Length: 417
Length: 118
Picture 1 (cartoon, rainbow over the protein chains, first blue to last red):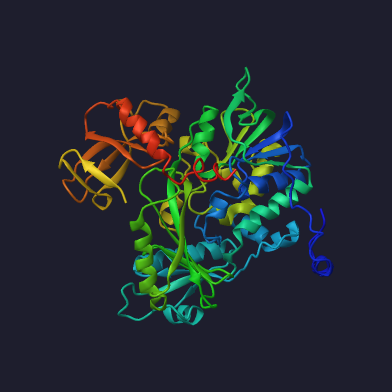
Picture 2 (cartoon, helix red, strand yellow):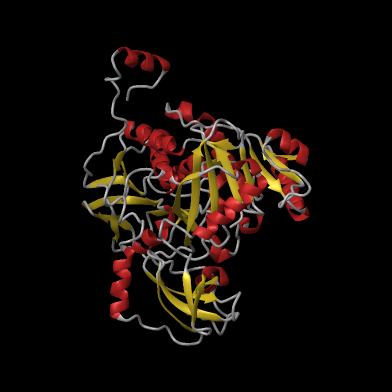
């Protein structure tokens, strides 16, 4: 792999950019691998990369039904933060945030991580108490998060309406300055390029149709649209389709698949300096480097695999955006889309061993999996290599629904579900 | 937005009047104190999450207020039928099912978009 650098750009500029390599190859699958990962999104590709880099396992296939990064990795609103309430959550999201900080250098790929700050608006006394509890929990755990008055919030985001007569009055905000955004496609591409460079096979347009199991119940490999591929270890990282894939191995996981929508506006000049989230009125907004306002809406209430979602969901979000930022009232929306999120009963992810020997699962990231990409991938790689979870992900096991040791971010999460 | 037929009001009303209420036909174990943790987790947390036809409960919360059951295709979101609570799981007529599968092809899913792009 030829390294990307300022010198490489200068060199290619001299010869009409004819010397750039393909970023990754598309090999035909071998008959067997040491590890198969199902799902080439950020989490799956990242796990393959860290398996190769940190655990010396390079005989890996990442199998993807569509194209890499074409699922939720390419459909989210790219918000990155780690200001969760419970230690299990803070552990993994903060691990992830620390990896974000050095990811571009690590991958030699510009993931455009931008710590521009994530601000959460408080609209009532309940929000205020809940946010202050989060702030205190975070700071005690060594994670930055701070309280702002409405005036301080307005100074940070000048387009915010903090007037007392506003439809949704604001009585303060929580700000995590290290939070921000990254370029979602670049994360998938960067991991794919770095993993392929270490010998990982990325097999796109190959649908897994069954998981074959041996006499003792252990996994033997997967049946795919390109034939049988053997492996003693299989990691499932299939986001909204995790229940469908796990069902192939006879494992039921406590997931609901729901459409989650996002939309972008026409491009504007730089006007919005950070990410603003309002859980109470359900609006998430930031501005991309191209100038589009990137807006996240809510999930539909019912299970669905249609990547669309109801119009009333985005209308509700846009109503809120127009009230919070009156200046955006006449901005035109350009595109809208949906992705399928996999939600657990406690709204915390599942990463761990399964009752099937050799089968590992990484799912349930719900509406907030993008921010966790490097951390989740890193710890999933550890899980697959060692056969047992890393300390930082131990609490995310599948068994917690039997033991009752839930991580109840459903109530504590900063996002409304 | 979905249009949902309430079997009590016998009318099609907008989704805004309804609240989704999870998978249908899950019976609470009679001996809830005696069952094992595994059995409780299965009853309480594990759901089918089907891709295709699913049976689910809805509540006409801003209408008659009553719970009822529905069969819906989770790929197209098309309702195949709704029926009153308390009735056993209703079989789906073959013609309705064929229509639902045809409907799936009109929706933006991997099979329709990314599959075509090959």
